[in-house]
Image (cartoon, rainbow, N blue to C red; front, side, top):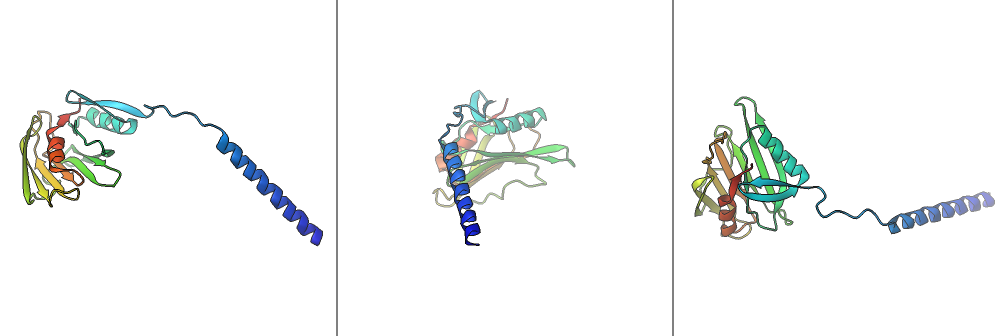
Length: 194
């Protein structure tokens, strides 16, 4: 019986060494080099070319092909990137609502979304500071700020765009992690995806 246990122990040791050697050999083998632009694609909003992940660019292109008028910010602070782009079909009203969510590494996010008044989008604007702006897409607008203007302040604007092809009733900008100046710049930069 002693001999059988020694053989089993020896087999376990050999198997362990073989697996360890195989694992080390695989780690040492170089993998394919990643391409800098792999998985990237461009969209055009207004007259600005924007590089996004290929997945998000395709989603936005599908929205456009469905006849959805999408306003996209041509200015996004460098620390943010598009985290999601979703489309909701409102079959009763034969319209679509979209939601674009931009997040940073700290998981602070802001959103741009469209919707019908009956369905609701955003909240009732009753902030403690009003930021006034103007853009080609929205005309005059007011952003309501909740908070002291720090990164945890929340922002909201809820307005009907002045874009001829706009089929939704309202557009909303809301979120945290941006300054007053950045919030104004984001909303002022909203442009039609072409």
